[in-house]
Length: 467
Image (cartoon, rainbow, N blue to C red):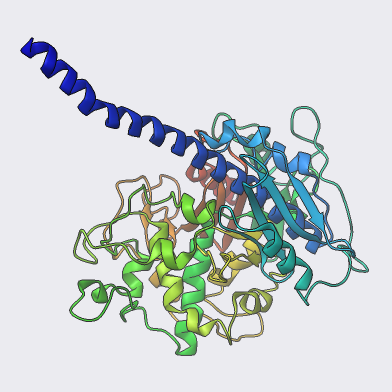
């Protein structure tokens, strides 16, 4: 009798936990659908609107085939089944993209701004507010294609590839990149090599004129913008980044340098390259990236973290009123590059920048030129190249070292020791080789689990150029 009573009591005690687990499972499933809907809305908006901004044309089908295939689980199983609507202003440009994920009241919106690209609204953001934002934007004017620009469609055959432009002397190396010889399952969209006044490039169906998301290559953009602020006298990498509350909050000791070197010592609840609430959930930089507590003394432990880059950018945010990223890009001739923001207007310079291969090569050239423009104007501090490429902070357990916003190929066989690189998800790379005056750009849409061997590709490119 006592055993029966105890068993019944145990069952009753367990019931709330079981119910809570079931509820949590349903909640996680709904959240995954909300993230997938946000991912789809944002990528459809950004890929199409940022292409049309420079006179190109992207179809939703091409975005689904490239940007929205092979993405992280479980979102990859969901995005294809979600419907979408692309709303345009009367004169043609994208106003916003909506993707429902759980009934008519559960819709994700990505809203387009002609100057800052697309930004994702929070889950359950009201439709009326989205429409009002889109139609009230005074900057919306003109059609998608300006006079003199060339409009084209991204054409892909049944294998996902189309005719390739002929180049020399790097034909064989470039062909291997497109044949996935540098990684099974990888999908190259553009390869470009620049040395001095010579440029060689290869691409399928006009990808050289199509912006792609840079992913974490944007972290190197962030480090460059910090450098520009230092050159102007608006920032000091050795100064506190302003994290934490009033003194004696130990987070006050975190410097901009710590943040650029992924050495803030802060905790985050996911691996450092996953910031789903901000990237796809519609949260903001302020509420996502700045509040984490310390678990290590700043400057002692390396941990790759989107949040560190976002906090470094936040530390120079006050300079953007007079020196916005778009103005910096324009100085470099990077007119096809757009830095996007969260819905409150903070730049997501850890990932959400859209750019072309040719524009990325211009950023690499700036570093070959020691931070100086072609007319001799210095826009990065003297010695900034050495600063970003020096492994002076704690180092990752990785085939690559880490500097300040750039990866280092200082451990790669057959590659000059001064080689450093911007690297991003799905195979985005800018490789800078100062000793050989070479910039290498590789763009891709590599599926999750496939990895392009950038060190081997760099070695083969450099060996070919030396022959």
